[in-house]
Length: 397
Image (cartoon, rainbow, N blue to C red; front, side, top):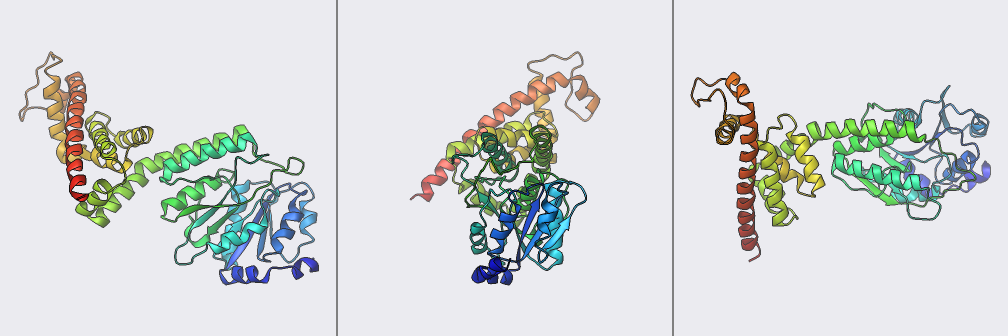
């Protein structure tokens, strides 16, 4: 142990102390690699918190050789998420503001810790995730597929693209991540980065080295159980993103910038082509007028993603069906539908019309609304394309 202390990199250790950074090592039955991981981290800092997640192997005896380290021992296995949550809480109690997390299975290199330190900024906190080269030799195919799957949903839920969302080698800004969580297992590492991104904290990748040694590495990932929990979590996060986060961000940006500035920055001056913008307008108008009451947001965003259109523009124009316009949309739908479907009870468009009358003529309304939606989407799309082209012409002069 004395040799390790003597070999401590004082410059990095000093920087970690100045920035109040600790290293959290969650471990569960990794006795083959735990000592090597701890010794390698000790070369950079003594600010280490080890969370023993109910290990049943020789972990407890190994940790007995490191009395100088902060240690938390669970009586039984509670899951990596719970271990990290407990580690975060202890780090805050000890006065740390940042925590680097490193797995105890030996796949990460402590020599990459300085990469995380160099990125730290107290003025602009961010959550950093070590990005592994998933194409290198030895990377399990299931890990590569799982990472791509996770990356897609992170992008869908936050709008941010990352190369690696599953790496456990990370740096967390402890005071800027959520305080309460729903998950306790592997899926916690997805929940925390998505919800941190929703708070407006940047989530970035930095390249790291990785080692997959089948002779030493022990994986506790259970494909069926953990994939099921991850799928359920993503379902919940997608629902929250579509019905709360996306509208919140949209109206927040609209309120902050004002309608004129928002229109200029998010629509006229976005990097998308005029064709993409006009198609996004058309999609928004079509979904907004169509009879998908209560589902417009999730449908328009899903289709915008599917067809690679501008989500902000599509969502903005889907709000064509906001309350003041609804009576006109219903009236127009019924009027148009009446030309195609005859009703046993004619509908008179005057003050005597009631919702019961509309229910009797529901087929007339449905057909009419889709026709109206198609016509208006074409009109808005073409008008948008013409106006955007004119704007582009004047801007480029």
